[in-house]
Image (cartoon, rainbow, N blue to C red):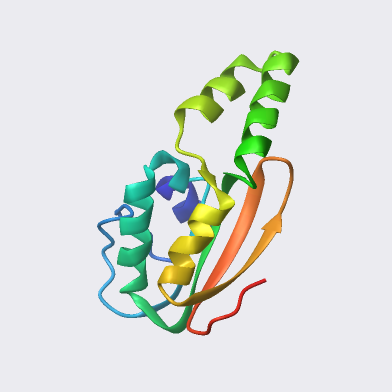
Length: 138
C-alpha cells in the first residue's frame, strides 16, 4: 500500500509504521484509518487511538472508515443475510476479523474528550470523524 501511495502522491513522504509505532515527531492535524482498524482487537484499538491522540494538534482529527455494526441485532441479521447469499469469504471475514459496534468505537473518542460525527456509507461501512476537544457529537 505504501508503494502504491508513493506512486500517486509524489509530494508526500510515505513512512513505515503501524498503529502503535508511528515515525512522527511533530504534532499533526489528523490521521485517517481506512479499512484497517478491524485487524486490531478492541483493546488494541483503544491503545492505538490513545497513541494517535498524543500526536494530534489541538482540534486535530481522527477519521475512521471501516465495517462497524449499529447493534448486536444488526450484526446477527447481517451475518445471516451474507450466509444466505452464499458469500462464504465475506462471512468468514465478518466472523473472524475484529469488527466493532459503532457505539464502542465512539465511546473511545468520548472518553478522550473528542466530538464526533458518524455517517453510514452502506450496510457495512461507517465513517467516524472525531475531533479533539468539545463535548457534543452527532
